[in-house]
Amino acid sequence: MGGALGNKIAAPKLYAPEILEPISRREGRDALGISQTDMFGYDCWHLYELSWLNAQKQPQHAVGVLIVDAASPTTIESKSLKLYLNSLNFHCFESQAEAVDVICRDIGRVTGSKVTLTMLPPTELAAITREPEGCLLEASVQAAGTELHAGSWCDADGDIAKQTLVSHRLRSLCPVTAQPDWGTLVIEYLGLPINFGQLLAFVESFREHQEFHEQCVERCFKVLMQQTHAESLTVSAFYQRRGGIDITPVRSNGPLLPEYWRMGRQ
Image 1: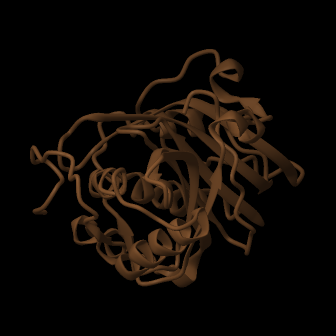
Image 2: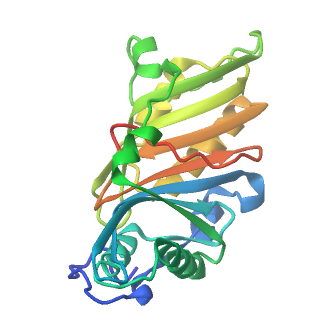
């Protein structure tokens, strides 16, 4: 992949929508043997370095919540998104509404789908910050290795259970730079009881796995559906921010409305 990723590039001082780089979703999905029709979901990006000039050339600042539908043919490479946002720092907009319209137009052009952007004052960040409630896997499993074991992930004789399972041990590697990405995995599940040891070992197996954030979540979603045959399944990964941006990909086997919230660690 050329362009911004993996290269040293100075922050642009002029509006530069052409710097945005798409990443095709199809390649990763083809490798997994899935398509966009196999799941629902979205990617929630929090943009902490969102700044522009108003009509009086006074700097404005906001925290942006960007929603990109998982059905879009492409996503945005995060470093190019950071550089694009930097290019707005000295650009004048008549209003915040105009800034939102331009940003959505530029990003939507690259993703091939409509995107939404909500701007929040930095002082309101606490209003969308919370911690996931559920069973913490690493506190429920006495010991777990980083290798999966043969056998069923579920108790076939158990009763259907509705659970929210959480692990803070998610670590994966950027496929271009090989730098680690850290996050919290949240699994909302309705189905036969899951073996927590197997599930935690699966989460830990990503520690040296190289894929983009969205691809890691889709891999988790596919494997969990295959292993558990869940009636209902939603997988979310709250990845810590890099370069003033964090991302939370969410995938589900049913339609769902986007949620804007973030974790404190992000």
